[in-house]
Length: 196
Image (spheres, rainbow, N blue to C red):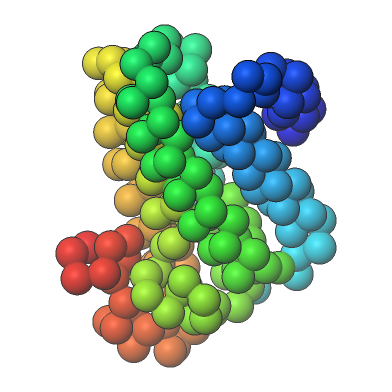
């Protein structure tokens, strides 16, 4: 959070002369800051869990997949091609917006490890079962596109596999607590409507 605040300050100072790349980078940082602030706030005000996964492996995967994307900038360098930087920035910003909307809809039911609080079926949850993960995958795809390398792609593929595992663990937990989850899950795709 502090790192993002420092980065936002740096982007604002470096904004002149204004360019699309600089504006996209600033928007990206501002939205990321909002996303993290929202996560912290919801973590503090969330309700008690009705159930938590007993699996240490599932809990570990949840934590690892939460922090794995932070390794991409450490293991790859950004493209200096303006078209790639702008396109990747738009993809990243789109994903962050989806994630913010999804997390704010989830509200006090937010958690990192698989837990059941209430079954949210409104907002983006009307269309997919895991819109937060969808937003994360889109935003991180933008980061990967801006830093295209074998290592960045490998991390993205690993992250995708870990998020699918997380989704399956959460679904198992929700189905055990909420009888209506079976019908809900039949009517909504896991990540992409009509595809998966």
